[in-house]
Amino acid sequence: MKIKLEIKRLPHGEELPFPSYASDGAAGMDVVSAEDIILQPMQRYPVKTGFTVAIPKGYEIQVRARSGLALKHGIACPNAPGTIDSDYRGEIKILLVNLGVEAFAIKRGDRIAQLILAPVTQAEFCEVAELDSTERGHNGFGSTGI
Image (cartoon, rainbow, N blue to C red; front, side, top):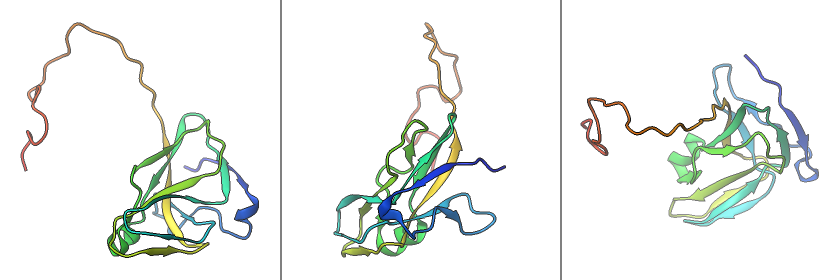
């Protein structure tokens, strides 16, 4: 199933490709940088993409790291998965952090992250006096084994 997304190119995004799937089975769309930057070790930076998008109500775009950048260079999305809400209309920026030990250069046009369009379910809380019991109960971190 495909959902149509309206996308607007910004002046600094001219000649850059829109987010796209690298294969038929890809869950995430590769997104590229609209700027040249050098990310120092432990530095965080919101990388410009050069576009805005209208996400339909009932959906979000999740931002996730590219596995190759994470493995080879320690480049990650510190809030992964990041969420872009359906009512946001500003430029899409990709928050990256360099967890590596060396500076990492990002060039305009480099693939920097993946975007995943996902449905959203909103919760409505209903206060109760007691919750149902389960076998696990209050057992938390590490309680289900190794």
